[in-house]
Length: 332
Image (tube, rainbow, N blue to C red):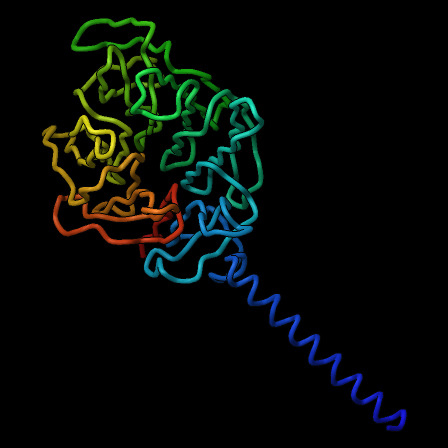
């Protein structure tokens, strides 16, 4: 074999190897979810579902998104890791567990996932919400215990007004009216705060003496009052007329809760078609549908959806995902 032939063989072998490596890299990226869905993750892209990616692999825990009308399509996965996530109007909360001693870093994000502010707090990441305007943020950590099924759990819930920069480290000191009377107790805990469209009225869960309450608060007046018992993790509908919440329906540790929707005008509650126990703060996909995270048997998480009027049946929305938040399409 002459020198020219040996050179041609070497060139061909090099091209084949390069093609093989390139193909492997592209397949690996596609399989990990790091590429797909048509661009980078943003918090203000209309018509998307944002969520925490739980696909196995290097992209586990990262912020991701899929189209609302094609939730089974290839997901776009970013680089930021979160243990709990929520976003609205181009503003996001990313909660990260840090260190061997339970602690949480709460990051306030802009639409391009740049960090605007970071707050360090104790405990495990638990709940997060952003008001529809992006102005009011709230988050909850488990300071003691790690489950609402434990009698010894304790929470800390904070509120941030992004317009003024005012941070309330714990809302436990807010004056509470329970059953029409001023109430004070050392065991009082709050969690799951969500703001109405006026960025002042809020709803939350309060727990004391082993009972939970749906609470309505006024941020500017710094007051709160109970509306009813046995309601946890409220989430206000886009029209601000209804609340989806989890209700304790069973003393069993396996199936304790069921999702209900409460009409705030009539205070009539409706059980939803999801019969599995949902330990999540459900979110609204639109004004007619709620979505929530459910653990899979054998491991992993998925996001499911169900009609908000009690009809229909649950449907799988996004596989390998939790902490969903919808970015609605702009009105045409």
